[in-house]
Amino acid sequence: MKISEFDYPLPEELVAQEPLEPRDASRLLVVPREGPFQHLVFRDLADRLQPGDLLVLNDTRVIPARLVGTKASGGRCELLLLEPLDPSRARWRALGQSSKPLRPGTRVAFGALAGEVEAALGEGFFDVRFELAGDALDAAVEREGRMPLPPYIRRAPRDEDRARYQTVIAREPGSAAAPTAGLHFTPELLARLDARGVERATVTLHVGPGTFLPVRGDDLDAHVMHEERYDIPPATAAAFDACRRRGRRIVAVGTTVVRALESACTEGGLRLGPGRTRIFIRPGHEFRAIDALVTNLHLPRSTLLVLVSAFRGRERVLAAYAEAVAQRYRFFSYGDAMLLE
Image 1 (spheres, rainbow, N blue to C red):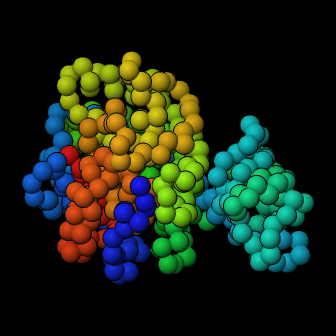
Image 2 (image 1 turned 120 degrees about the vertical axis):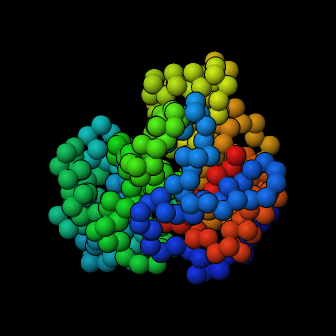
Image 3 (image 1 turned 180 degrees about the vertical axis):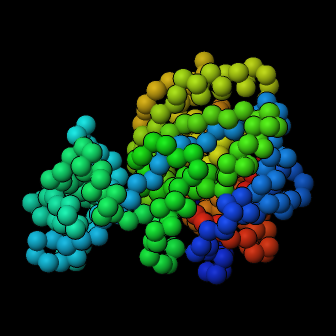
């Protein structure tokens, strides 16, 4: 299968540059299995779910993972922190770029945070050791780092993005990008869902290159997914089993939740605890963990669009995207959402 089969025309002005306020004022395109699409507001989600359904959200927290600074030579360099490599959090895997190639031994400084490139791994990946560790390193990243807004948001991050490019349930720090389907939820909407009898659970998947790196080339079989870390709490596994027993739907909020649940799902339920996944969900995948999906509108030719197409069928999904373009929906991270029932 070719990634070019998952393309669609998108006017540039439909790429959302700013989030809406309140969060749940975003539009919601409802895509049933058959029949016409429906156009709602995101806060209407509470009316589309039924008592006993289980809504699963990602509680990862985005860190200000984008570091912009200089090399010892004075040249500009930039790192996107992806994952700590040891318990002290002094060593990190990162994506990097600079005015000239970063090489092992290169000294880098980001304000008061300094370090050294330990290894160049290829394709823009590096291992970096910082002079700080633990809480001191975390505090320095909070102070010196920028929120890692995606490149299609064509403006510099602002202070308000530290709260807005974060879900209201964000708890576990570690992501280099937001689980964007969760950005639409407000405390008020969550309270409405609770009052309606919709159950709620969380998983943690720290968003990294496995989610946001583009497909190189046209052959999907040749695409290598990067690992991402996830964790399934015991309470979520118990809620999953209880929902299956009562015959209600598992509703995933976002592709990151889909990847975590599908990776952890076995015939006996969900595997508990931490794991790592490089699952690439594409047409032909047999979904075992989810029954419905809340998701944002994704980039053309992306693995995320491939995943959504695997869930509801490529032609149906591309027809929904054509409808979203025709109705002037707002696309990508700060944009509108879909509910695939």
